[in-house]
Image (tube, rainbow, N blue to C red; front, side, top):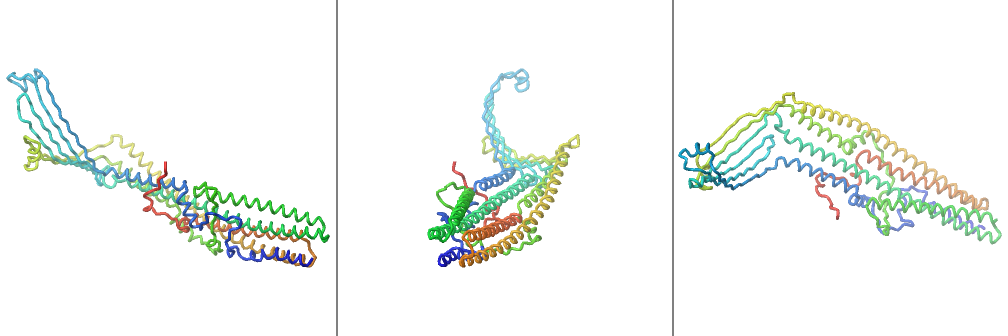
Length: 518
């Protein structure tokens, strides 16, 4: 009897001696799950960032926004416009043409060959103006008179510069607005990354909790099996009633059921982790090495410090700031559009004439046969510019909307951070209380084992105490996981989750995107 009880004492008590310490100090050893693909937590996060389709889709959206900037910048791209026409015009002269062109009445038809060449380089300039540098050459020959072909050339420049409406930096308003839109898209990209990484990390900690729970329940099954074996041996010897054997058998069945449920939870968590990496290869078991992550963190968050980090990093806040800047640009543009259209127009050119193309061009360059003009063009809406007034009012309203949204986001961030900080401290307290409860349950089990060894208790009572200890151990494990999730939620509230996990992104490093095979 004494020998049997000593065996039970060793089997029951010593597995819990090592578990009586902090969870953070436990060795991170895989139990029944031995993954073919074992990653550190940071490596898993990088795998998620590189392969998750939701993140990649938002990456493409950001690249599209950068292309929108290039499209708007094309307004200043120079253009080359050229045309060439070779024509022949032969017709009878009307009576009026005969009197004006042929006073002697000996010519009855017109027969002309013409060649027209036009080449222009034109471009908008940052001051809001438009510049055209062009060359025109016309050649004609009247076959009726059998004259040589005449070539005329004109080389000149035309400038149109707005003085009121559309002048100055207003011409680049659409470019600057597109840049702000791109900044907003970048923050949306960061927001999606934070969302996916947070969910992936939360799933990892769920996986950790289910894995450790499976270890606890597997150990409990082994103990129940050993007790049942011992009870059956004692029943055969007539030293124990059959009812105690049935009780031990029921306890074993219950524990196997719990072990099976924990196994299913673990498989589900593993598949969820695999989904975040966009992998469906169920033949490869995915496992995470938490050895560097499970040390208890004495994080003591401060509200003011967290608020400051959120203002600097939280995507929603930065996004609204960029929207406000965009609306300021649009208000400035709308205010400019209320001015009358007053343009300074000027041109200067050189004329040339010759018997060949080169002679005509050389004559324009070498001699001062110039043509120039300068003037003003004024356009005033007679109705007072209803369209421009409406657009200005709309732009001002949108700016006010953005400012109100900023205030709303500030309030939301403050409340979210306050809740997140409170949750960190609350889950830490729960972890401490559950740890204390586990230690007490362990001590009670030790006492009951000593009573069993002295013949004052039964295996049923010992199993009940062991079950109570397992409940306490699982409660401590759950509160530990909840504390880790609370710390992650605080990092999300502060906007620092990507930085904390080494996957923060910079705009300058996102100009290319992985192409998807079609």
